[in-house]
Length: 241
Image 1 (cartoon, rainbow, N blue to C red):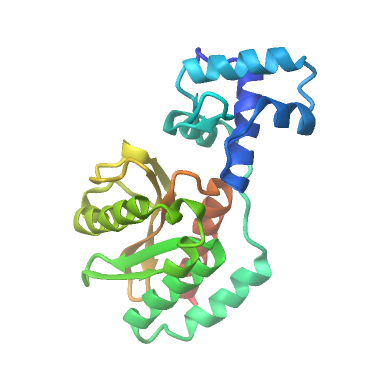
Image 2: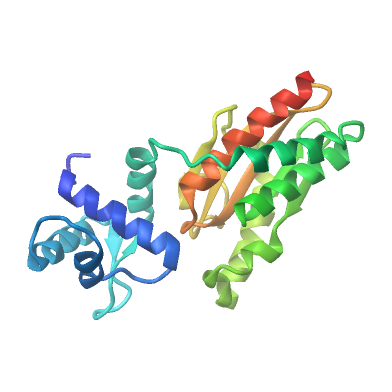
C-alpha cells in the first residue's frame, strides 16, 4: 500500500506480533528495548503516530500503547504471512489415525475433526457438511481462556456472531484454499470484533464440507492457517486411503 513505508511495515508487524502474544497495548518503549530498528526512540514514536493516523493502529487511552486495527491486521495477513507455521507433523499424523477410526460414520468423523482442530489451535472451531446440513462445534473451553472473553459483552457478541455465521454460512465465498475474513469483511452479521479462517474440504464419500476457526481478531493467523492447510490435506489423504 502506498500509505505505508517499509520501516512502518516492520514496526507494524512487530506490534501485531506482540499484541497477538500478550493482548496488551504495545508501547514505543517496548519496541525500542526488544527490537533493533536502527532508529532513535523519537522516530519510533513518530512512525507509530503515522500508523495511527492512517488507521493501522489505534490508542485505547492517551497514555496507552498501540493496538492493531482491522486494517492493520489485513495488512499483516496480506504482506507478512509468507511463511505459514505448520503444526508438527507428529501431531498431524496422530490426528490422522484418530480421525480415520471414525470414517464409517460421517457424523462422528466430522465431530472428531472439529474437536482435534480446536485442540491443536486452542481456538473455537466449526465444521460441517453442506449436503447433510450437519454442523459440529468445539472449543468453548479453549476460547474462554482468551482475555477478551473476560468482558461479558464481548462474550455475548461472540455467541450472537456464531449464530449469524451458522445461519448464513452457505453465502460465504470459499474454496479449497483457506480464506481469512477480518471483522466486517465477511457478509456475516455481528462480525465486527471477530475473524474467520474458512476452507472448503472433502469428507468421506465425496461429501463437500467446510472447516473454520473463529475467534477475536487478535488470533494467531500464521498458526491457524497452517493448521487449516494441514487438516484439509489430511482429509484428502483419508479419502483416498
